[in-house]
Length: 334
Image 1 (cartoon, one colour):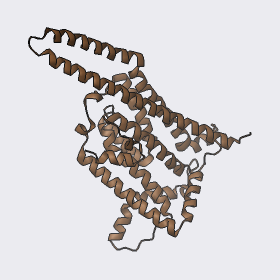
Image 2 (cartoon, helix red, strand yellow; image 1 turned 180 degrees about the vertical axis):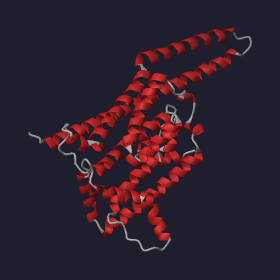
Image 3 (cartoon, helix red, strand yellow; image 1 turned 120 degrees about the horizontal axis):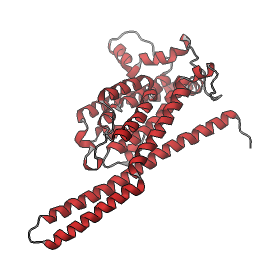
Image 4 (spheres, helix red, strand yellow; image 1 turned 30 degrees about the vertical axis):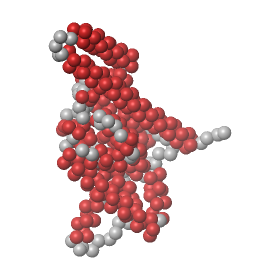
């Protein structure tokens, strides 16, 4: 069976992202298992130490010492056998580094790379071109004006004459991606391995404009600094509920839900009145690199959400793996 270059490129990309997704989830599972064992060992050690304080119990003292030594030996063996620290850091670093390089090379600088004679896939759209034409930037500029539907709400309440957006589904697509990355800030802030707060805020602001062009490199550097400086805290003895700013999380969750809820309502209305906009949106995704990047963002946000929530949550819930909904559920929890 023969495949065209277009089909082969799609197949290679599919397996590439499938590998990254599996690597992140497998490592997250290993970390959860390790932390659970570590927590159980810590509890047993504390119980035994409590028994040591009982008077006139030499047997308890001797047995507790043996048990504690045994547990410590098991704990050390677990760490040495699994090489947990190295694996925990290297897999996410490699995954997010590959994502960052691919995202920048293909989706951000794809047209510039092609113009410079560098190899790019044939399926990659060359719109926007390099240098970009003003007409090619019109759709994303129009959508940016309607960021979070703020202009629409202002025009509605001011009773001014305002024309409905020419492509409602395009605006829904844009605002859903923006609301999702907007809701990441409380999660990024309480991450125990995060970089300094100004870097986190700068990354988040940049991600509001260029999404994973900022978020993916940040996660790669975060893992690198954590590996070098070991700046993570003991996740087994601390809970995200003790450090999460409930007020901030609720505000961000409420804003994201409002935007996405209104976008969903708009999509239902336009589906019944102008269903042809769906085909227009799909055509835009495959012909415009900016909107192709937004489509890729939704996949990467799902992976990033699941990965970070496993890092900060003491007891990970299956609901947290549900794209967007899991993040909103975490924001409103506790």
